[in-house]
Every structure is written in C-alpha cells, then in structure tokens.
Amino acid sequence: MSLRIQRFDEHLKMPWKNGLGITREVISRPASDGSGGFDWRISLATVGASGPFSVFAGIDRTIAVLKGDGMQLTVDGRREVPLLVGSPPFAFSGDAEVQADCLGGETLDLNVMSRRGRFVHRMTKIGVSAAQTLSMSGDTVAIVFRGDAAVKIDSMRSDVGLGDVLICERMPFELAIEPLGADCGLYVIEVSAVTDQGSGSETVASTRP
Image 1 (tube, rainbow, N blue to C red):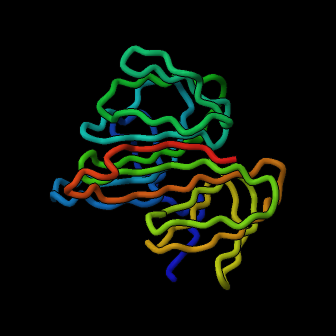
Image 2: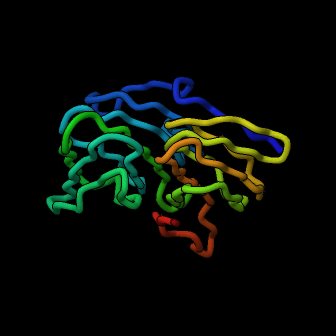
C-alpha cells in the first residue's frame, strides 16, 4: 500500500486565481482535456481579509474551516450561515459570485474542487474525541487533519498536526487514530469519476460524530 503524510509546510504555495491571496495546494489531478487546469484539487488557504472568492466555471466546490474565527459567506447575493470551525462542510458552485467576510482574525480553510460532469467529490468531517479505527473506501484520496493525533495504518505510525495530510492510494484501508489534544478532528476526501450512466453526479458534504 502506498501512503504518505504530507506536512503543512510541504504543500505547494501559489497565488489565488484572482490574485488576492495565497493558497497551499495539497494534491491535484491535471485536466484531462489538456486545458492546463485541473479535474480535481485539494488545497488549504489562509484568509486574512474580507474579499471575493475566485470564480471557477464548471467546478463544484466544498469548503470547511480548520482554524480561526471563520467567515460569513454571501453566495450569489444570498447570505449563508456563518462558516466556523464547528460548522459542517459547505458545498457551492464555483460559477457563483462569493463574498467572504472575515468574522475576526485569520482563518485557515480547506477547499476541495472537482470538474462538474467528470468527477464528483465528498468531504466528510469526523470528530475524534477518543482512540478509534476508521474504515476508508477505495475512493479516498486524502485525509486532512485538524489537531494533534497519532495515526497507524498497518506498520506505518506517525504523529500528525493541523494541516498535515495523508495522501492515499485508491484502495480500502483501516486508519487507527488517537487524539493527542482536546481539539482533534479530520476530513476525509473522496473523489470518483462520473460514469456514462451519470452515477455519482452530486457533490456531497457531510459530518460524522
């Protein structure tokens, strides 16, 4: 099994599409049409000031807050519920005009994007208050950690922290995790191709206790 932990400082830094900030790309799949974009991407971004999100036409997006005071999102003129650390992941269209207003200081957020009609993604938030073992599906491409924990997969053991990411091979596996602090959680990211029959055509964001 090919698994590796990518530390927060190892993620690739790049400017936002609109030039108003910096994102850290965790992993991406280049666009299959040769356009130079991506078919799906996972990234982390630090938001330090209010402003608009970049527009990504034809892309479905899901966002979650890992750390900080959170944001108030307005999507195509509609004011949404504030997005906080305790909030479930929020899914929206990359075609939408989105204004993000900071609710305090800096916020670190997790972003997952997939090209509509080609791939669909699922972001599942899981709280970790005690040692447990989680079963991962063959569609799992990454596990993003929020807080300090000890993890074990077969013979691989490691400590992880905020913003560290387990990059996964596409095969089922068991993840044993033990929290090392009071505030620990993770986000499981699954990505699957859309079939000709149209199955898996809806992006899903969910929360598990």
